[in-house]
Length: 139
Image (tube, rainbow, N blue to C red):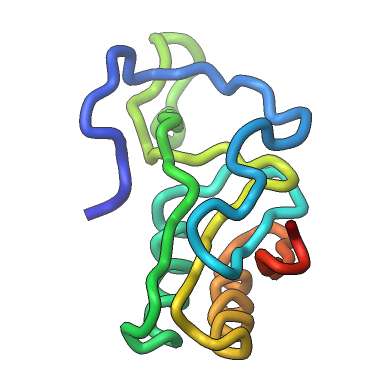
């Protein structure tokens, strides 16, 4: 089951702006180590899930993982070979807006080497540049 909002008042959203730095969610709140974004992008549910699976697989059910982003923006797409007009297309997927400095994942309860490698594997699944940060160096 993909990540998506349980209920939204208006399903079809406008594209919005991706400019600026992350306002909230830019500091480590729960775990000891985290994966921080350095680029801006739209991450869809499949990309977030692939990265989450990579983290949990490598950690072998030790420690705890927090997903700090949530895809709450709908992404619509019109069918192929459709003429212009006739309204906005149906919802294709749900996306999370990622800005530089956003924390994407946090982990705790594992050694730094394990956390670093699991975050490296997660970063390969994402289409953005990221960096590994820890609470001691970050704070």
